Structure formats: structure tokens, C-alpha cells
Length: 278
Length: 298
Image 1: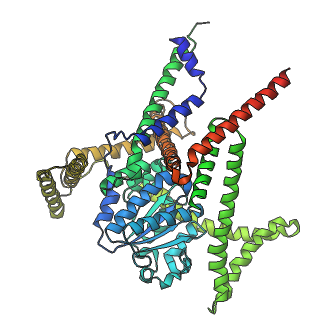
Image 2: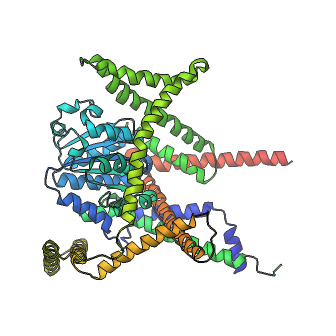
Image 3: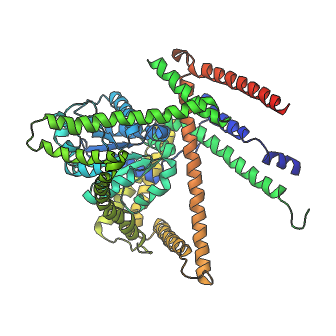
């Protein structure tokens, strides 16, 4: 066995890249429908929060990510927006990441079109403003002053939906879908903790650990974690889409990595020099 | 235009992925374009969203205090004096403003959010006292009735596998809500589980803090406790790594979906065409470089 494991340890790592690539590509052609996808308490909490709000509630959705995190966070955005529009809530969208402005607009517009939501009355896309936390502080005092125009150049004050919203605290809920900072932590520190509005959100897999502390401390309600969280949300709103379809690929990739980790460890123990050996 | 976008997206994705093979000209082109386009995009957004919206339009307006906007503009321009060594000292005023304003906002907010509230959440009672109020009992009864109603609902005729899974999920969620409500009003298994979680958090926080205590020697009980801290750290690192793997695989899946989508004839079969061209060029480059190496060796 030892020569085999020695060869394994010396193997060109590009074979691992290839194997992983094939494992992720395979389920895009043949759907395996692997079992095990169930809504977790954190995702259910976000769903219950939106589901329980009275019709016409005002919700701010902040797209705090860029195309680099699109596969993880765009499905979350689509699922949450579908739910919000289905419940006839009023959506104001924006973003704190400059490189995500156009992508966020595309997500909002597509979701709104699908739900026959009317621009200016059912939803508004404000776009981006520089300043990270300063934007939140500014919005807390005067949203119209912070965003005098929406992303398309319309006067914000002239939009029917925005006529009834002047301060951040007037929103019934703020949702931040964030890939890092500025994001959920910024909204909590400069927004919800200070001006006392309800806060929830979603984040990438890398950030789930650091954002979960805010859920535990009651600073936000629930948390949608990565593509898996998006798939759970799709399950809850009964509309399976990109994220649910991607779970097979992710699972196969995970199985493969676990096998590689185990093989690597076995190879290490089999091939390591023994005590007193040559 | 859509076909051009598809070819661009496929080309740049494959250029970046080609680094997995080895550093090559395609990757270099992709890398430099990424940096350049990001900065260009940022400048354009900044121009329209800040200069036009927040300065130019304000100055063109009729508000009596419109010229106040020139104060931050001047402070901003002072930052640019860094490029002129003789007057670069003026940029310090702008930096002083930025740092003062930033620190003034950040320090109290961060302390409240990340220290005070987190500490409060950690210092929870280790044992939960059941809520014996009438409201809590009523909430439990309501949740119980709902769970029973959902569980007793008959399956519709011709139910699909997906609909069945959804219905069963509904039963599970209703049951969980009932158990959760019951755990508030009486001491149940779920309450014990929640208390156990609180105790784990308590032990985790303090043992990790002990591990980073360097002013006392780690021996005896302190050593044992700090070792427990290491275990917690290891679990955190493992979970972090697992999450990172999941995140990276999601990103890979996202790109592969796009590549698959753009391989359709309506996009001019962008993916297979570019892939074949790239492989051919890399193979040519490989043969050419091998020839050069052999010449060198000779």
C-alpha cells in the first residue's frame, strides 16, 4: 500500500482540480435530487418574519455584494424579493457596494417584473452612494437628502412609495444581503442598534460564522447562510430555483473533498517515517 | 449585444480559470482587465452619484444654503494636495477631518454592537425559569392546536412527491413551533437543550479567553481550561473551513451554470469555441516553450 500512497501524495494537484470540476459539472446535466434539504431554524425565522408582517409593510433590501458573490447571494435576493412581492410588501432596494449596483438592479427588476410589481408604487431602486456607514447615518436622518435621485435619475421625492418614507426607522424591516463589510455588521452597528428597527439578512458561507453571533444576541432575526440558505428559502416559498438545483453539485463536491481529506490523512500516516526507522 | 456580453463573460471566466493549469497570458489579460474595469466602473459611479447628484445639481439649484456644499468639496480637494510635495501638508487637514469624523462615529457604535450587546447576550442565566404566565400558556395551547391540525390534515389525492415533502415539512415546522412555545412555559427537553447551549457558550467564551491570557502561567487548572479553549478554537476553524469550501463550490457552480448557459447556439456556442481555442493556444505555447528549453539545455 505504501508505494500507492506515496504516489498519491506526489500527485499533481491539477488532477484534484479536474476531479472537483467534473463533480460540480456532472449534476448540471443529470439531476440527482439528493435528499437532506430542510429549512433550518435561522432561515425559517427570516421566512416567518416576512410572512407575519401585515400587507404593505415597508421593507428596505440592501444588496451589499458584488458579482464575485453572485452565485451565493443572488438566489437569496431573488427568493426574498419573490416572497416580499407575493406578500404585497413595499420594497425599497439599494446597495453599499459600488461594484454591485447594476447586478442588484437586474435582480430587483427581474423579480418585480415576475410579480407584476409597479416601479415607484410597489418598489424603488435607489442604487448606491459612497460612504459606507455614513450612508446609513445619513439615511437615518433624511433618506431623500441621502438619495435625492433614484438609480435612474428620478427625483426620489416624486416617487409615490418614497413620499411616505423619510427616515430609516420608518421601515418595518431592513434586509441586508452581504458578502462582507459594509454589510450586516455595518447595518447593525450604525442602523438597527442605534435607531431601533427590525433587521435580518443573508450572507456568504465564509461569513456565516461571524454573522451568527448577531442572531444569537438578538441583534437580528434569523440569517440566510450561503447558497444552502437560499435553497432552504426557495423550499419555504415553494419555488425551487437556482439554489435548490445547485445543492446536488455542492453535495458532490463536499463528498469528494471529504474523500480527499481522508485519503490525504491515511497517506500521511502510512508514509510517515517510523520511530527508530531508517 | 447580448451575444457580445456572453462571449466576454465566457472568455474572461475561462481566462481566470486557466490559472488552475498554470500562469499564462490569458490569465494575465483577465487579471489586468479586472483591476482596470473595477476602477473605471467605480470612477463613473462616483462621478454621477456623488459629483453630479450631490454637488453639481445642488449648486445649480435655488436653495439658499446651496453653497455650503462647497465646504466638503474643498476638504475633498485638499486630499489631492498629496500629489504636490510643496503643499502636501494641507492634506493633513482633510485627513484629520476624515479620521476624526470616522472615529467619532465608529468607536461608540462598534463598542455597543460588538462588545456591550454581545457581552449581555453571553451573560444569560444558565438555567431557564419557565414562564408561568397565562399568555405563555395560551401561546403553547395555540401552537399545540395548530400542530395537531396540520398533522391531522389528510393528504390530497394524487399528491406529488414534492408536494408530499412540502406537506411533511409543514408538519415538522408546526411541531417545532409547538415544542418551542412549550419550552418557554414549562421545563422540557427543548428547554434543557437551550440551557445546554447557553452553558456551551459560557464555557467556550471563558476557556478561549483563558487561552489568550498570557500574564499567568498555564499550569494546573488554568492549563486544563485553556486546553478546552483550544478545542473550541479548533472546532471554529474546522467549521470556518467547511463554510469556506461550501462558499467556493457555490461560486464554481455559479460560473459553470453560466458557462453551460452560454454554450447554447443562441450565444454562438461561446463556451466550447473559446475553450477549444484556448486549449489549442496553450498547447502551442507549451510545445514552443519546450523547444526553447531543449535549445537552452543543448
